[in-house]
Image (cartoon, rainbow, N blue to C red):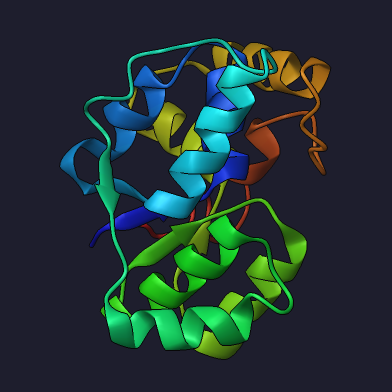
Length: 167
């Protein structure tokens, strides 16, 4: 299953110079929408995020039919979130977002959802990172501005659905 990443998740990994971790855990299933990618690029142009190689990330465009639903969601969400929610619901993709309102909307639209913490937990589960390494990365993200509800990735791994389902 394609996992659409919105700008919040992309930016968290960009802020610490580790977009490669997204690729490591999601591989060919990682994608975003033009609108979210434009938000990421704006952050890079403004000097808020470092420039990294994102050439491996698939960037999807909406169809005319998707644009109709997008315009409805645009009244409540920013461009990237609206496009991600639209495309995830209409194409049956998963959504990776840390935005609380967008995550609430995924329940209504029956979209599988995860986020930054879910990706870090998956990296630990898959053996790509230790819990300590994941916690160090999380601490760096928090220092860069990520408002994480937790400070220990190990807490996610102890839960009933550790890393969320994105594949």
